[in-house]
Structures are given as structure tokens and as C-alpha cells.
Amino acid sequence: MTFIATAALSTRADRHRLYELSVQNVELEVDFIDATFHRLRGRRAAMLREDFCGTAKVCCDWVRRRKGNQAIGVDLDPEVLAWGRVHNLAALEPSQRERVELLEADVCCVVTRSPDLILAMNFSYWLLKERDQLKGYFARARDALLEGGVLFLDAYGGYDAFRVIEERRSLSGDFGPFTYIWEQERYDPISGRLICHIHFEFPDGSRLERAFSYDWRLWTLPEIQDLLHEVGFERVSVYWQGWDERDEPNGRFEPTLEGEPDASWICYLTAEK
Image 1: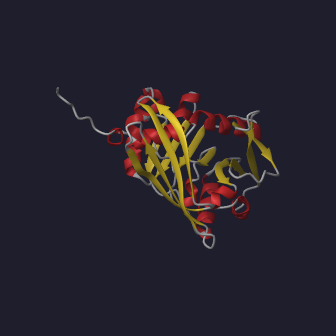
Image 2: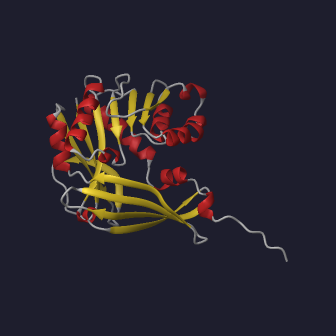
Image 3: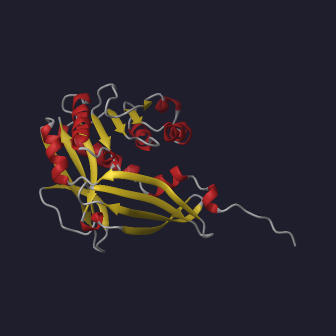
């Protein structure tokens, strides 16, 4: 009998694809920003800038929405931008691809065409750990927006956010099942520094260790709102996620002035120029 050795699933896994499957829900996210901008401004946004864009999946979904939509993606990592060009931009029709511009640049100093909206999602702006750094980024974003433009952010919190903790979710992709693991390795209450990792496990027992790692500051909602107001945004709103009858997140976010002190929560913010 001949035995044929096969490579572990972890060695064949594409970490960017796994991230898109386990972390991002681009369709719902773009639904939210599109509908919210329309409600706030009474018109449809056309030009979107995605800061810390990663694989630029949001940019690609945006230009698919309407023929007039354009997108700019900004990220410092050439490897993730290259992956996005091969896997996401290449899947667009030529006329759609022409309306996406990807820039390898620092979001804190990049100069682009003025968009209707800018978004910094997946807590990416938490890489800016000093108050002056984050304030500077918000000021640059405000200056870059068209008059009447809107900055979109997300944030998470709850008392679990301050803990050393590991969470697991069983998921499946076009290559089969896998387990997504979110690890909060360390939190320092003095500096607010938060060290996190994403790992993936596979049915053959193999593991993709630290597929992504983050060295963040855990910014609180009052801190974020204060900085947005300080740089001149006219109105800042928080959108809280609702729950279904099974006490599970329902994916719908509504504006509110008060949140719930849950173990874990996710919200969106808008800052209007």
C-alpha cells in the first residue's frame, strides 16, 4: 500500500481570505455607510476613501453598487495591497476596476481627491496609540472630506475588552471548515495598550498561529468623541448594535445616546463635517 503525504491545511491556508471570511461582513458594512450617509445628507455618496484598507474589499463592493461610485484605498502594507489587486480588483469588471485607486501610503499624511466619506473600520485607527497621533489623523481626515462629508469609524468595548481572553468561532469557507480564534493576550490599564492575535485552526489539527497580530490602544467612546469634536466635526453620533429574540447580535445599528454595559459590544460612529 502506498501512502501519499499531504500538506497540513494550515500550510495551504490563505490568511487574507480567512480574515475576509471571519472578520469582515463587507456587504452589511457598505449597506450601513451608504444608507446612513443618505439619511444624514439627503443624497447618495459617490466617492469613498477606505483608510487602512487592507485587501480593499470595501472599495470593490462600493464601485459595484452604482456606476458613478469611485473608491480610493489607502494602506501602508504593500503585501496586502498586492493581494487585494490579485484577488479583489481582478474580480471586478474593467469599467469598475477603473474606478478604484489603491495607494501605498500613510493615512496620517496622504493627499487624495476629496471624498464624500472616509471610513476606518475593524478598529484599524487604534494603531495610533498617542492622543496627538489620533487627533492628527482625525484632523487630516476632516480636512480631506468634501464639505458635508462624513467620517465613519467602528469601535468595540465592554468589560471583556479589558481582559486576557480567547474566543473561538466555528466557520466555513469555500475550502472547508475552520475555527477562528480571537486572543487578547495582554491589556495594560495604565497605558491602555492592548495586544491581540488572530489564529486559525483546521480539521486536521493544524493551526495557523498569529495569522494577524495587533498592538493597539483600547480607545474608549468618550475619548474618541472628544477628539472628533476637538478637530472641528460638527456632529458625532454613535450607532449601537441591536439584538434578536435569541439574544444574538442582529447586525442592525441604530443611533443612540446611551449604550448597554454588556460584556462585549460593537458600535459605529459618524463624524459630520
